[in-house]
Image (tube, rainbow, N blue to C red):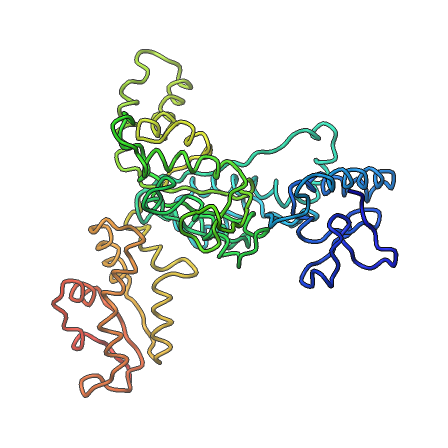
Length: 463
């Protein structure tokens, strides 16, 4: 099949011959030498070679003949330019990627504590998006003959920490900072294909929806897979029963996390042979997996007990101690993750349980702090709300007692503020309409959360 050109110079696909009249919604992109291709042909896997030669053709006219020749050969292949393919081939997007220090400074504005985890995340995310969006330095490195054959692989991330320690918030803040689509998936709902539950590919549908079904945009997004520890292998003997929600899910996630061309049902649900699919390449999607991994510390303690005995240098002793206080791949394998899956998550960092002081800071310091949110809600009712320092500390103590971490602070605040907001929104003879200020004290917190509230008599108002 030869390349077809329109003699009058109007838009016509060089492969399939489509025109704006036959494809009114299509765009026709010029690749080289005046040859144009419609969206379908540009998106075909066979034309990836042509797109790769585009830069050379623009830089040196001698390459234009080569591009045309390659396109001619590709046009002769069965199915060239047909079918809906993922990701339109175009010039790579270039944008400035924040430095690791800038990323951490932004995380500090929204996430309290966890400094070590934020450093690890900042470096990993910077390196990941530097390889995608590049920049002047990256473009220069690509042209350096020394690195011409070097392909930087992505490094997915595993966050280990108790509930409410900030795993989800860290991932969401990173996506907001980098202006890329973000989706959260719950690993507990996933099962092996053919069984009751969700197919693994459905987590990609969440990302597509966050990107307004723009495949190209979704292919540069972030997916946070929560409760990843819940898909640990349930039994060591798979011959007894099929582990469809444990090892089966890990096997299904392997290729998607590493990078593959996945086929996603547009409406979700199970696949069937006659269904249309959206194809999305996952090689540039950053996967951040998070889990509490309850009991992992005991595994690490056993490894520590089996560690080095006897005399050693101070340096060797310090290195051994550091290794015994952070999770290693063998710890996750013993926990129930298969080695291949652990290998797809090379960047591992831990988040510590928040202290009382940390929870006080969570309530007051971040830009979107809960205290600020409720102050704004009351201000919308014309009431100036304030909290005494001891009241905030009392709320933090309750969160520690309930072992819910930062995630449980909103539930406590709702429990505390519901009665107050009800009274503010419905003035009675006991609560004057002229209320303009409200101070929450430690006693009000204790009374409200214990269920023995005398909130009306404890309110301090200013007419």
